Amino acid sequence: MPIRVPDELPAVNFLRQENVFVMTSSRASNQEIRPLKVLILNLMPKKIETENQFLRLLSNSPLQVDIQLLRIDNRESRNTPQEHLNNFYCNFEDIQHQNFDGLIVTGAPLGLVEFNDVAYWPQIRCVLDWAREHVTSTLFVCWAVQAALNILYDIPKQTRKDKLTGVYEHFLTYPHALLTRGFDDRFLAPHSRYADFPAALIRDYTDLDILAESEDRDAYLFASKDKRIAFVTGHPEYDAGTLASEYFRDVKAGIDPQVPYNYFPNNDPTQRPRATWRSHGNLLFTNWLNYYVYQITPFDLRHMNPTLD
Figure 1 (cartoon, rainbow, N blue to C red):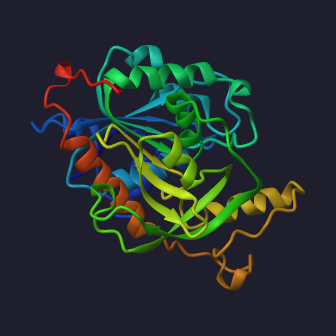
Figure 2 (cartoon, one colour):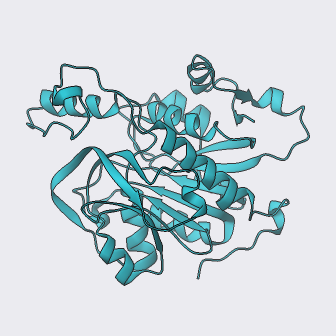
């Protein structure tokens, strides 16, 4: 089944070129199936690119998904046309009295910024507090994981000395977990972050189950036992060329960045990189939609009253 998006959203044509089944709102209105309502809080600067990446993953499911895009930063964007934001994004005030089956909070380039210095930190806290009673399951990605751990578990910001960038191998740590169903025992995933997520810290200071981690004991995927919250510290949504774009951007800026680990063929930035993480990325989002959202959400969202303990 398809994702359901506004007819004019740029992602419609972009994904159809990849033979991804996308259903526009006008067509979906003629069907009787109750779609899952998923809210995406897009914190990335290049919002259209990020929309395309997440919608691609959400489309690979037998479930019909009704997408709503959310923004909480009203400052003028340097990377996304204002018309696009006005046409396709809602403000929190527009949806605060609604319920949603799922919420995805994306990453943000804020790894070296203290939480209280983030311009929209109060809004982040507000959305996470609201989600306790209005969202069945929330998925946090990269920087959003760090923010959520601070807000929900009072874990201080953990920052790496050097940026973690590249494609890293991970292994499963929790046999038969629903969120990793179908995963290989070892799989690759891209990372691009200063945030640090030591597995020992997660185990010692939270009640979360770590489902996958790296050889360096860095937590990659973890979740609550009640499936209400899930965390992925990498970027399974990234395109094949996203890390390359970030690397060459930093080279141009004179930052002298490290070459992303295990990414360019022969570690040569002049060669075209290949995506080696698509299968696990698709499985991750399909499993989240099925086991963490669809299987536990009420058919009538007006009857929702979940709380996070």
